Length: 295
Image (cartoon, rainbow, N blue to C red; front, side):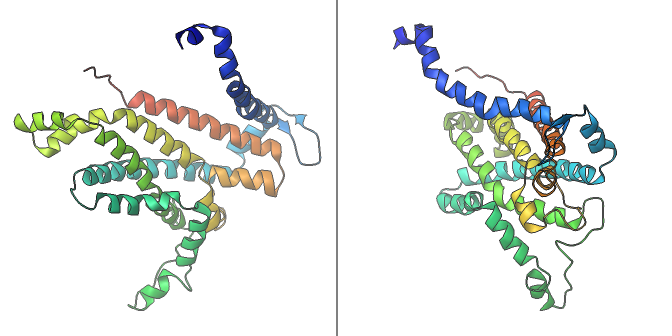
C-alpha cells in the first residue's frame, strides 16, 4: 500500500476518472454559464456577446429579480437561524432522554426524506382558503387569512408560510447531524464537569457548543446554500405568485430560462446565485471559529 501511495503515476490513474467527471460535469458548465451570462442568447438564436448588459438589467431594471433576491435572502436568514437553533435543541434533548429516542428521532427526520414537490402540493391543498385550514377555523367562527395569496407587507404572508413549512421539513436533517456529533463527545468530559460543580446549561455552553462547531460549519453552510437555491416548495405552493411576490432566485431563473427561453439572462441569474453561495460559505467559515482539540 505504501508503495502505491508513493507512485505518482498510480495515484493519477486512480483519481483521473473522478477528475474527468468533475471537469465535464461541473467546471466546464460553470465557464459556459459565465460566458452565456455575457450574451444575448435565446432558444432559436446563437449567443451574441453583449458584455454586462444582462447584469445591468438584473440589478437596475428588473423589479422581479429584486423581489426574488430579497425573498431568497430572507429565506436563507430565517432557515439558518431557526433550523440551526431548533436542530441543536432537539439534538441535545433527544440525546439525553433514556426512552423513546428512536421514535422521536424518526418522527422529526421523516419529513426531510419525503419529496418536496409532493409536500408542496399537500401544503398548498391545506392552505387553500376553500378546502383547507380556513374551513377548520370557520367551525370556530374564525375567518382565516389568505395564506398563499396575500400580497401585503415587505415580506408577504405566503413567504412566511413557505418558510415555516421548510422549517418543519428540514429541521430533522439538522437535528440528525448534530446528534451524530453530540453522541461522539465522551461522557467522561461531562461527568468531570459535573464533579467540578458545572450545571447542565453550563456544560452545554462550555463543552457541547465548542465541540460541535465543526458540524455547525458544515450544517450551516449546507443550510444556507440549500435555502438560496430552494425551488420545489415555492414552485408547487405559489409558483412565485401572487404577482411575483414569492419569487426566489431559483423560480426566477426557471421562469426566464424555461418559460421565456432567455438563456443568457437566466445564466446571469445563475452566476449571481453561484457567487452568493460562495460568499455565504466563506462567511460561515470566517465567523464560526473551529478549534482543534488534541487528546
